[in-house]
Length: 158
Image (cartoon, rainbow, N blue to C red; front, side):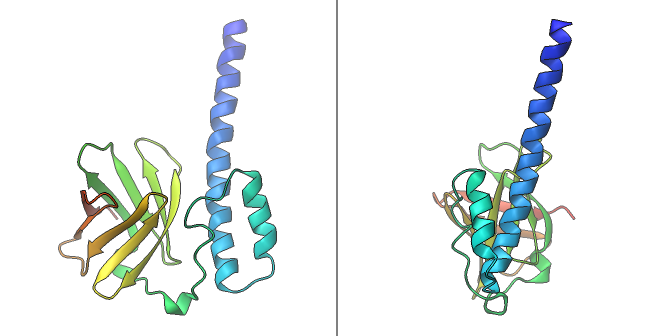
């Protein structure tokens, strides 16, 4: 019975972590939209986000209006990411200028980044810095560099 209780407690803890990650990701997206629209509820959303931990880099900094940012449809969707010496990774690039980044076999995103097209480049803003990719997409792939100058390849999954 003690072993079953330990297993149950572990499963409850793991499911709570996944639920909180999904809630935080959705709340960050709503917060970005509220900031972009100059919505007065943005402050209440920020307060709720802060109860989940410190604001992540990039969450509170996106203040440009949606029309000022360019989000090409060819970039939207799920991309497999290849970085030297890194585990499997996927990026879900969305029309609203967010990118849900999932590491390894996780089922929910680990981080939410922002992205936009700037001239002939696509830029992703992460907590560790900016990832820059060449534009346009060729054969469902884009090549680029991470904040440390390491090569990164995105391949369209769907």
